[in-house]
Length: 231
Image (cartoon, rainbow, N blue to C red; front, side, top):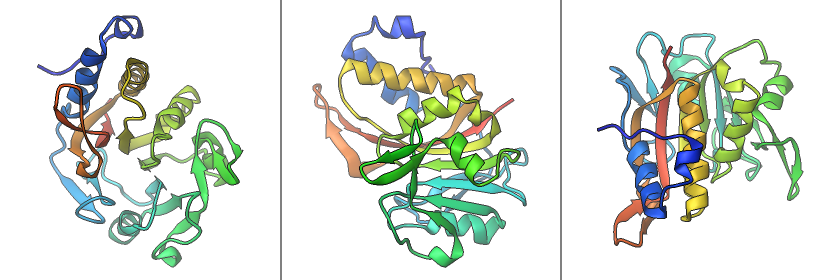
């Protein structure tokens, strides 16, 4: 049986164990079939999947936003070299990244508000699109691996209507706390992604982030989730 996320009011009535099970159950469940999936970039952590079915195929002039590079730009370079996409890569914690000459790199992050935080610059997705003069362009793939900042960044992007302009999402979801309040918050955001018609076509655990819960279950705090927008 597919896991269904209930209303916020009902989520608040659930126990911590029920919420944890619902979170992992939902993110480990494929909801829609993509017939042609291609791995772009590293085979392991750092690479991401792309759905190549006709409706979502990244055709020129495809546009890719990649938030959170670290020291692995293979996905970004792959999207440019394989598909000819215009790729913009962002990471406020890196001044230099591999293959910088092959990509458009900015040491700017994504968040729920624009400004300076801890000496680093952050922008909302809306302000990134304005800054790059992309307000009239759709984003073929929005990739985000931003160490728990995805929750507030996605919340702001949805409230601004920015995800109406995105076709595919590649997200690493991080568990930022193992108490009920976090799981309610996270599940509510994921439910809102469903309201924007995003559905999971591929999902995988990042086994670099394992934890043992109170029931001695081996789980992960990092889940790589790939979504396509279905109409």
